[in-house]
Image 1: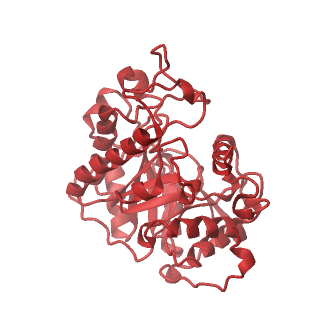
Image 2 (image 1 turned 90 degrees about the vertical axis):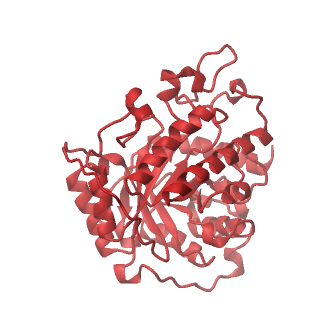
Length: 388
């Protein structure tokens, strides 16, 4: 088995463990727990796009966090006092929930969930505070629509709906009606004022018995990659009319892998169709001895540095904006582990980054003050830090 294939399989297994993990708090973290307080506010307005900062420094925020006044206040304080200037907000998740009103197909299939009933008002508030708003949309992993409209689903050989190891259904990435469903959600997000649309799970299934996957057209690595590129071309065509940026999330190993990793993701070709690409370079998701590192999870600087360096050999630096790890999985992460990942970006002359934590628990002590948000310092790197 090739080393990147082994690494990929390990990253999938770790991802499954990661989604089930519970993360502990400390005095150096801010906890934005899943909570929702009902509100009935409707705002209709024309929105100008936010003025993007020189560098993007953002965090992932779930719909339930943003829907709570209590936790919304905590995020507001973070944006006001730290270098953070970007909110990545869940608009569609892999269970199929959609957190945005006004999409006919969403309403017809009853996939709207009122986690953020005053979303338009909140986007306007972000703009007033100079915060860049990104709408995160999980594209092809969707456990609801394929069950409601089986013609859009990845199938088994017998015609039943295929599911992954966790029992989740997937939309067929070749099916243009599946594209249209997601793109209408993206267009609506642009209409209410988001500055950027970020497509996640823009890939083919990876875990489970993928040999049984049947699609609406003959499947191959070449065709899989082409389908994702064609989706992005259609997204660019439709969303450019809205004046929004487009980004994609990709597996961290795509920065150095030369094939599609069995999921259709080829970072060079995908980057050509979007404004930004965010490889998920979480050190906990790399196998032992990747990049010559015995235990990648304990060497976050080296993992991120080498991942970013590999990407920069292949894609433009102005399009690179990685997801970094602010959670613990097998090894405790705190201020030093988070900050050293950020420094690895800076040492590659990459000034933008996003922090990921599924429960929105972030390490405040790893963040600089507000007045330092658009600066970064490159440190001297020793040869042992960059060995592959």
